[in-house]
Length: 206
Image (cartoon, rainbow, N blue to C red; front, side):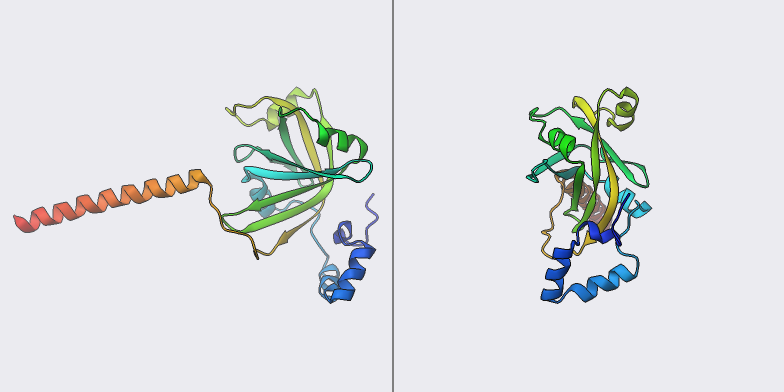
C-alpha cells in the first residue's frame, strides 16, 4: 500500500522538501500537491508517448542502494502499455551481466526515463518492476513482430507516479529514419516542381 500523502512524495522526501523550502520552490510544489499532485495512472496521451519510444532508460538500485541505469531499445511499440498502471516489454538478450535482474531481486523500486528529442519532451515514471521468466504467452504478446532480437524474459513495470519536464535544455535531435523520410519527400517535391517548370517552359516556347 502506498503510504505517501501525495503521489509526488515518491520523489519529494522530507529532505527534498526541506531543500525546496530553503531554495524557494516549496510553495509552488505545494500548490501542485493541493491540486492532486502527479498522476498515478497512465492516461491516453501518456500511453501514446510510451508506445512511440524506440529508446528508454530503466533505473534500479541494489540492496545497498547503489544505482544502475540500463538502456533498452527496439522498434516503436516495443514498450507496451498493458493497463492503466502497468508497462511491459520483452527484455532482449544482451551482455548477460544481469545487473538489473539482480537489483530487482533485492529491491523492486525502479524508474523509467523517457525522452523525445525531436519534440523536446521527457517523462519521468516512478514505480516498481519485476522480472517474469518462462511465460511464453506474455512474451509473445510483448515481442515486436519481425524484430531480430532474442527475447530472454519480460520486465513488468508498475506505475506509482509520473511527471513531465519542461523542454528547457533538451537539445533537439531527430531520428535518422525520420530525417531520411523528410529528405526523400523533399526530393520528390523538387522533381515534381522541376517537371512542372519544364512543362511550362515547353508550353511557352510552343
